[in-house]
Image 1 (cartoon, rainbow, N blue to C red):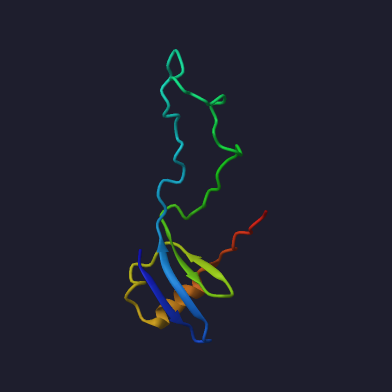
Image 2 (spheres, one colour):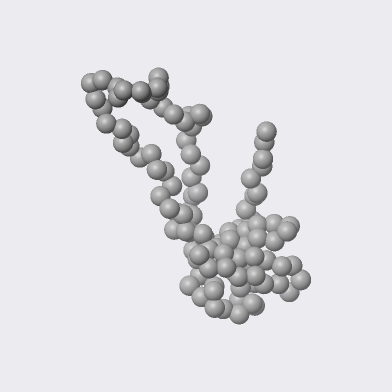
Length: 110
């Protein structure tokens, strides 16, 4: 993962890094073996261990990764990741930031 910090022409400081997600859904199949009798000490009563059974979020169009721009006021994502983002000049990096799509910050609920 690369990382850069730059100030845009308005004086806003941006942290920039690339994000390349791993396999989004680990549970593609049930890896547990089916046996006639449960193993000794088996405590599970249900086959599903997740607390909340729901579909996991899908990052449409972001499966190949994205460039993340984050400032104190907002966060943005650019896809696909430009090949020269780690070595280009600040002007070009600022242009990539302007092209990036605003990304909402996750809300923390109790």
